[in-house]
Amino acid sequence: GRGGGSRAEEWLRQMIAAGAKPSEVSYGTVIHACAQEGLVEKAEMWVGRMQTAGIPPRLRDVNNVLSACAKAGALEKARVWFDFIMTSGMQPNLHTY
Image (cartoon, rainbow, N blue to C red; front, side):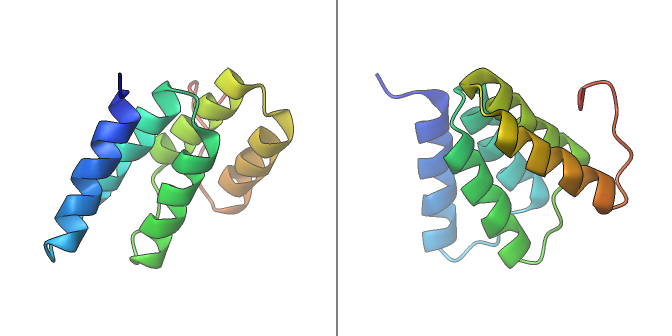
């Protein structure tokens, strides 16, 4: 069956196709769903689309990408995202670690 990430992505794609402007919560929902399944590349792609749309990712969004990295064993990517948190002025929290 299709996982939550696929369903959430499809929902967001339909929303964009219909001309709606997704909010940070809409993007965050999809990033979270992808992260739950360990889909690092998809979670990263949606953070990128969020930034392209002019919406800065929140700490929880980046923490979700870190969670996906942890699930996938992608240590180098996790390090890149951790550096992003540290250089962006965000304050890491318990979920970051």
